Amino acid sequence: MKLNTIFATVLGLALATPAFAADAVKIGSKNFTEQFVAAEIYAQALEKAGIEVERHLNLGATLVAHTALTTGEIDFYPEYTGTMMAAVVKGELSGSADEIYGRVKDYYEKDLKLTLLEPTKINNGYAIITLPETAEKYKLKTLTDLGPVSKDLVFGAEGGFSERKDGLPGLKKVYGIEFKEFKVFAKLGIRYSAVMNKDLDVSYGFTTDWQIAENKLTILEDDKALFPPYFLVPVIRQDALAKNPKIAEVLNKVSPLMTSDNMREMNAKVERDKEEPADVAAEFLKEQGI
Figure 1 (spheres, helix red, strand yellow):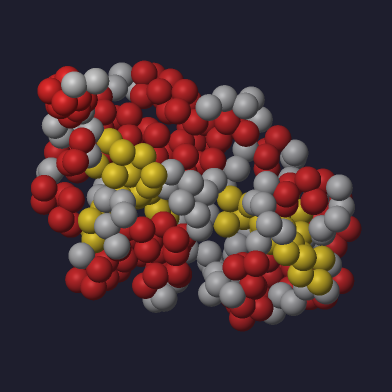
Figure 2: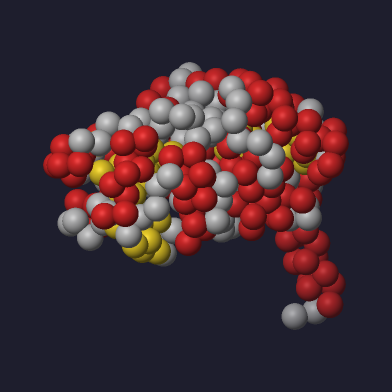
């Protein structure tokens, strides 16, 4: 091939690449279904508004995604207010949803050059779960009830739950809960099959998990309010927002449409019905008129 032909080919490829690709908004997510769906909802809403998006989904657990954000690998991702307070701010977990949101937002803006946009109506808080027959046998309705009998029961969760303030240390401090055994599992979804198969007596879920109602599991009331609110909210780099303020306009329009109820339904479509997160997100946006 002649040199001028090669040059023309390379030039043609360069011109075919969108000029705004370098300015694409980089969206990330953590490593579970709800995060994939929420990130896709935001990504597709931005694309419908004419904003180029670059996806970096399934980054990993909280601190992996947070590090990607602070280093500029991504521009924003959806995170939970209680998780930010516990894992990043490491502050007091008690307080109303507005108080937790305000304290996290202040810390992120002053110390990390990040900001929180408008929160969704998704409160994906912890729910301590057990079989109805276990609850009946030990007369369990609240976590206070669980304290005195916990020494006879086996609990299961992922490894990090044993270190979080709102995990095993919090359960021990607030409720005097100390389980006979703590089993660690690698995948979040294992908890439900383990409880149903009686490999565990007690575990935890999240309030937007469809499996709780599907399996008719009993949720023990957090009667002393150990667990903080976990409202899902986009967390974004201030420099990305300054560069393109329209991002906030789009996301703040979408977030109030996202609720615990419709997220529970979307999680089920992906995990139970095997639909793709991107398809579920597209269907949601269509239903919402976006």
